[in-house]
Image (cartoon, rainbow, N blue to C red; front, side, top):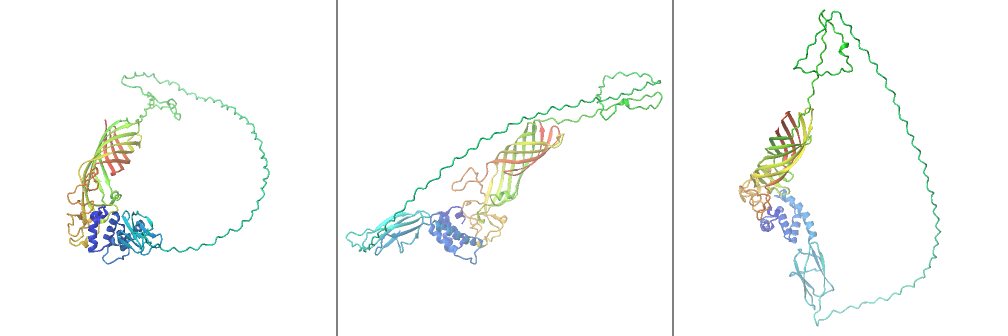
Length: 530
């Protein structure tokens, strides 16, 4: 059955015919009919489809047998529309007419008879007193052909008497009545169409310009006179100290509008000889400016992928969650103020333990145990946009995308046919579909005994036994489908989001996640400014 589903009908037909002769099962009869259809034997296939479609569920039939009965009804209706028919109609009644098609006498030649398309049919017709005639025809799919059969009488033979044909008296047509002609209708004269006078547009009114507004003159602000203190009698002149050479002059800020000058604040003396000290203004600290931009960074870190089982479901059934560890080295350069262009080389190890898998639409007998120890190098380029989250640019949000190419330089992909682990060797009836995660590897064709539906050499995985290594998808073994081991593959990540921490001017840490063609991306690394 696997050979039939895989398209190897020449090998499958003898095996399926032998199985049907020993024991009839709808699950094996329908694949046999499918092969007949592919070989162009539509009549044989139609007979099997109708036979299976008329069956009812019998004891011992499993789910595949019931599904085969259901599908046979649909396939029979579709196939009947494709089978061509032939009708042979004699042009006149012939006594003792015999029509043969491919040496087989047709009892009712005027009724439609079905034949396989593309087959050369030899039609032979004979009748008493007439010469034998023959011709060859070929029918196409869905063709409904009808042949008019005319036989030549033998020389000297008696022609059948012709029956007199009664002539009908000729009927005289009744005299035609003269048709009264109607006088021509007079059309009323057309009324002239009054033209509307052209509308006169009112003259445009001039737009009055507003006179320029005069601003009121500014009032002078009266300044308050500064009260001068009278000199005290007990005060002595104070000698001014010369400024020190090492001291720098302190820049004084102008007084604020809400504050009063220091001269207006009275100073209180605590003793007769003590004079008040002038107030000293402290300069405000200058706020730190933005960090210096670094144009070239060298980084390294961890980069890995997570391949969920859901991605296997896009191509088939089975699979499992796979973690792909690795790392990368990157060189990034600044483009403008906010963008980074990052060039990277990464390593990834695509290791997968024994996992059941089969392509979509294939039966459970096509499950295989798949393993991998592939290792790859990836070269790519990413464009990242930096969005500072604070004034000092300590934290930054990063958004970007990237593309590249991967190369599996080491490791292999292994595929092995599998059968249900709960089956009992030697009992073919126990080899029924079950949980694919409990399937075990076949040891060889029909090994263990009774596993011929799972462990065989009938379809595309005929040699998938322990030790089989899948070829690259750039090679195609003779008589086998194209290999599935990836050699060079595209790499794309979109989008990539992350967070950057820059605790020092020349050091930054990066955390990033994203979605890529090889799974969900995650990375943690460090960069150093060059």
